[in-house]
Length: 233
Image 1 (tube, rainbow, N blue to C red):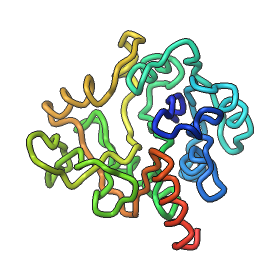
Image 2 (cartoon, rainbow, N blue to C red):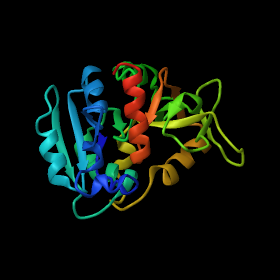
Image 3 (cartoon, helix red, strand yellow):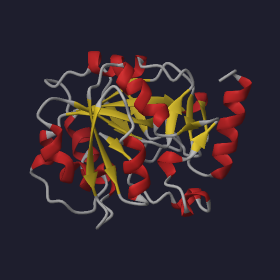
């Protein structure tokens, strides 16, 4: 599932007329920087949720080749990350799925992180496996880190610590059944879902072996384009 329904408020005024997933970074749409490696990793079916300037996103994804694309229409309400999965649950099947943000990507743009997530995910030990970015190998991320990772890969929150070494990199793998019985309403996964999983030791993380670029606002967009130019991309 590709999350493409956000309002993009921090990216204004660019998002007044263009949905954030369709903003170009060095000549390529943000969402394409994630969808292309997703398809290269072997994914054949993609659910994309839409809300803000939904027609533009629908138009764009209708031209995607290499995978069947299904739209989860959220025009009538803003559901955030959790509500979006609850609404789309009937479309997602029963097998583990990737859930992908469209405001960040990694430097090489290759499918390797998706392949590695699929190889490491163990539903007997974990309910969600998050891709983690090293905060010291990132650009455009202004936070203090999200998680501390144990030797076994289980995650705990930063809590009262001033910082944590790992940030959520915007990609995870999970069992969609966890969302199938939830009410379709606006809620954030970070608050309602991840907390109990941390307590149960069933939220795990896999470090990204690459530089991570988060594109949250116009300044971060400029920085990402400069980084790509400097690295010949």
